[in-house]
Image (tube, rainbow, N blue to C red; front, side, top):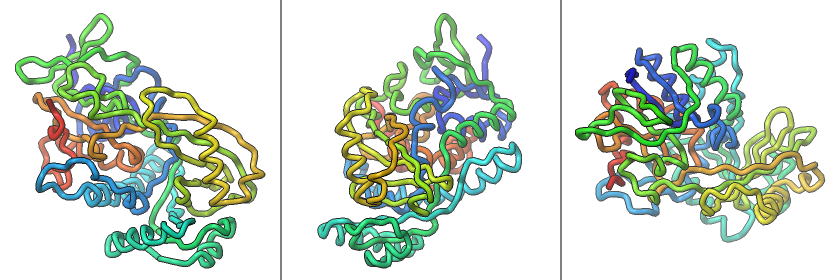
Length: 381
C-alpha cells in the first residue's frame, strides 16, 4: 500500500484549490474524483464573487454553539478576504499558466421590487457600512446606472467591489496548475475512509486501498455519504439549483443584479445566466417547468427585455447545504482527517480561503479566529 502525504476525495473547486496549495507547500497530493474535475456543482455555478450581497441571506438561523461569532459575520469576513484572494489567484493562473478565468470587478446591484423589501434593503446597507463600499440609491438612479432595469425596481444598493468569474475556466485552470505542481488526479470511487486507532491512514477504493498521512474530504453534497466520517447524513445535504441561460446584444447589464428572488449574471460577451432555485429535493437532478418558470419571471422582472431573448441552455446542480448554513472546514475527528465542504451558495467564492485554511491546518500553522466557527467538529457524532 503506497502512501501519499495527502489524498483528497473530490475534484471540484475545493479539492482542486486545496490540492494546488498543498502541492505548492511541498506535499505529495492525490485527488480522487468519480468523473472529471469540476463535473458537479463547481462548474455549474454562476461564478458570483459577492460576499457583500450574500450577507443579506440571513445565514446562521440554525443553532450555532454558544460564544461563536454570528454566522453572518463569519461568512462576510471570510468572503471579503476570499474575494481578494480570487484577484491574486486569477493573476497567478494567467501569468503562470496562460489561462484567463474571467475575473472582473463588475460590481453587484441588489434591488427592491416590492414595498416590503425596502426595509430589508436598508438593513442590508447598514450591515455593510464600514465593511464594504455600498451606495444606497433610488429606482431612477438604479436605472440610470443600469438602463435595462425594469420599472418595478423601487430602490437599490450598489456594491462596486463585488466581482464575477467563469467557473469552468477556473476549474480547468486549477486542475492544470495543480498537475503542473505535481498533483496526481485519478478517476476512482471512494468506498470509505480508513481509520485505525483514531487516525486516518487512507481510503478504500475498488479492490485496493490508497494510503495517506492525511485525507481531505471535499465531496460537496455527497460528503455525508462517504463511509468512515462521523457525520450524520443530514449535516451536509443537497440543495438543487436550476439555471437558465440566454444571450443579448448588447449585454443586458454591466453589473450582476440581485432581486425578485434571484439574480441575473451578464458576461462581457453578452451571455446571461439567470437563476437560481433553492430546492430541497434530495439528489433529483431534473430541470423542471416550475423552476424555469420562476427563473423567467424573476429575470424578466429585473430586465423586461429578456422576455424576447432566446432560451439557450438550462441545467441543475446540487449545492452542499449544512444544518447551520456555515461550511465545514478543518479537522473531522480522527487525526489526519479533514473536511472542506458545506459551502452552500458560496463555494466558488470561498474556494481560495478554504484552500489556505486546509493547507495551514495540515501544516500546523496558526488559523484565523473565524476558523473556529466553521470547525466540522461541531457536528461530529
